[in-house]
Image (cartoon, rainbow over all chains, first blue to last red; front, side):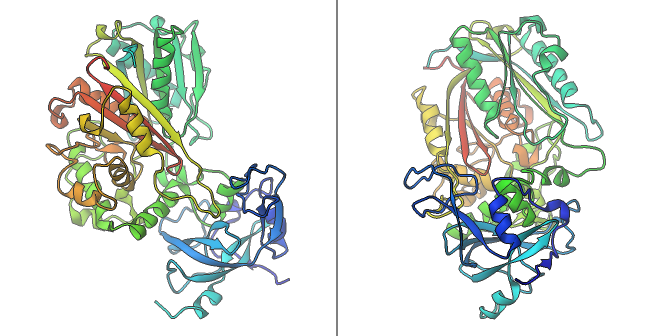
Length: 150
Length: 389
């Protein structure tokens, strides 16, 4: 397992709580493993979802490792730098991605990106350290190599 | 719907920028104003419904207001949270309680004191959502405050409809024109195109002038029986209809649409309770934390085609003399942001005919469309000068 990068973007104050419903997700992330919840019949669930909307099952979720490949759904650029949580000195992207598993996440990048992200871009997630946690970020190098350029 | 209840009093306190009174202090001032407006005494109040304000960590009005305000024995006292729709929902619940004989004179109350000395509104709201669960994970991704979530909704809107970024500007400009006539508005000068375009991005595609203007303040609305409602300073404003919708906004496939699903149904249901349609509405007041929201609700309600609300606004249809005057006090974007209070107070103002320079001639039916969360929650409240049909 590679050591996670120290995050360039947010301060430790922005670290997510390791309590439920993120405990298993963050335990996996600490090991470099993207683990997300599914119902017992394999449908993706939200972190705090107690019943599957597709089949009505309400058993405890099954947490499975999922591939880190994702597709960009939409993106914004945050220009307001909130010093309580953000250490970056420049506008930064937040990107909505859909994983192969069907889960959607809002993530930023593992370093300051040179390019903007466009809907439909294929990206790969990695992890960075924020406080005592590791959280997912888009791997910028991977993204740049897979694009024709904007 | 029977003419069981009507609005008889309003108190609105919009604090000056250097007034950092507590939420409770602001609330009690608003209640006093509302009682004077309705021509009643504190002792006449037998119900108090509090708009839960989840945006504030520390300073908030609680059920202790009953003791703090020396209300004596109340037949109704509770706090409710339906996100941004709460204030409208509480007015309907007050109507229902009065219709059922459970109270005679109910105060619906909201107070907010999020602004503190030396802390900008952006910082005050950036911590919203906390560190737990989905929102906590989003925050660690740099997604701070409601502006980021609505920037994503705007990104989807601009990406998936014919709308353009200039449509956001059109709303900001149109609502500023209305704000010029509102003494409570934070800014009352014409908004030029250059001024808008010079406004910095907060969360692109949303600029500072696309965002609401948070203030400290409070509002109290008195709902009472229809026969009592005429004893105040102003005409009674009847509650003609109310409806809600809430939807799931899932974060996994099959994905939930980003659109305001349920808003149109709540709008039609509320109007239908008095046999009305959108064509009967004289003034439309929309909860507009960002300029995006009036655009998508005008489309949801059928006033404009999908992606066509910007053209509708640019054509002056939401302005003075337009086909559906909208956010006639400037809305939250150009006047003041007190969550669900802003559109309700403006609707009552218009129906009472006290809008001054911004008064819509012959306004008699107002629809208030409130939203909550990330457009998962919708409500419509219909107010009518006439006894509901």
